[in-house]
Picture (cartoon, rainbow, N blue to C red):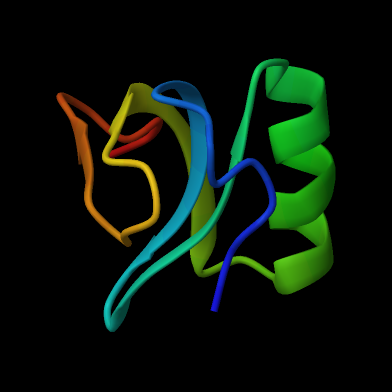
Length: 65
């Protein structure tokens, strides 16, 4: 199942760390924040690299984490 922005290689990812879920990739942080807010407090926005067509997303830090 594809996610919003599945073709974006680097950008703002909306993630839940436990259990792992990459909900979307965005070029603009504001768009990522909008999705994260709609999904609830378990989701965070962080910048990183995404492997197209997969749930793989690497990043160095989570805001507030």
